[in-house]
Amino acid sequence: ALTAGIVGLPNVGKSTLFNAITQAGAEAANYPFATIDPNVGIVEVPDNRLNKLTELVKPKKTVPTAFEFTDIAGIVKGASKGEGLGNQFLSHIRQVDAICQVVRCFVDENITHVSGKIDPIDDIEIINLELILADLETVEKRFTRVEKLVKQKDKAAIAEYDVLAKIKNGLEEEKPARALDYTEEQLKIVKGLHLLTSKPTLYVANVSEEEIADPDSNENVLKVREYAANENAEVIVVCAKIEEEIAELDQEEKEMFLEELSINESGLDKLIKASYNLLGLATYFTAGEQEVRAWTFRKGIKAPQAAGIIHTDFERGFIRAETVSYDDLVEAGAMAGAREKGRVRLEGKEYIVKDGDVIHFRFNV
Ligand code: GDP
Image (cartoon, rainbow, N blue to C red; front, side, top):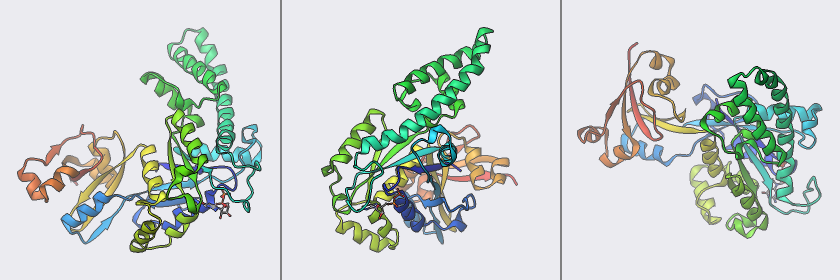
């Protein structure tokens, strides 16, 4: 399963945020893929469409979909020098599929900052520099392997050489590999390099309790926004401390609490949605009288693979995917109505599943 890693300097609020994630806690029993590891937190993906489908279909049970966050603890500075904990930090980042970098924007004199002052851009650059240095090393290693083949006029090696040169130039200007432009062919080569700075990244600006209703009053948040915009990255504002409190509430209490704070969505919910997107994940639904359920798939997969997410038998014996889009179903008001209007399609093996599809798989056993 794909996972988003939470990273950041010490004392920026990572553990507090990760606590909120595990507290909000999805029921692990519902999710057989779930990793059992104290550094992994499963979150349910908030999705209003699931509530609406539940209203329409009135099933016995409704099950949201979920995915995992990984808490990447450990020392950051000097990590690329490759000793002990630093090394571990990098190898943990290597294992995640996207990065959520927590940045301290709250000012609190009682909580020390590792660099002695609150400077979010400095903080971001400390971490990014370690990743850049580690990638430079990877790129250098590839260079020495590829160079010989380039001399033999090996076409694939020449293509890779060009990509490596481009990335190296970028890294030397402190540009992460993900911020460069590639042709589609080059993109495949980049993927094969498994670089740390090519992982999709977003920034989590952690603000104080007082600022959450109007985070842009915090200068540090504005700085993070500007920095992120430069590399087309998203910024999610949270107050980790409040998220920790919210995570203990039930749905009704949570809504009341958010209203008091004059915000309409919790920072954690925003982070969950943004990370899901960042990972390239999307949701399809199954909607039967027994159960209405959301399922996570990787954007771009075809119907049989999507069926396989429910059960391998569904993929093996796949015949057709009876499919209606969420919008069409809601407009028609019911499955029968959607069918009458000709909105229910019979899709075959080559169909690329879309976010919001409501699917009934037909298969041979
Ligand atoms: P980590 O080292 O990055 O995991 O940071 P922690 O989550 O342990 O947080 C460090 C300290 O900052 C703790 O005392 C937290 O209570 C505090 N902290 C975290 N988030 C916030 C916040 O949003 N506002 C305030 N005032 N304090 C926070």
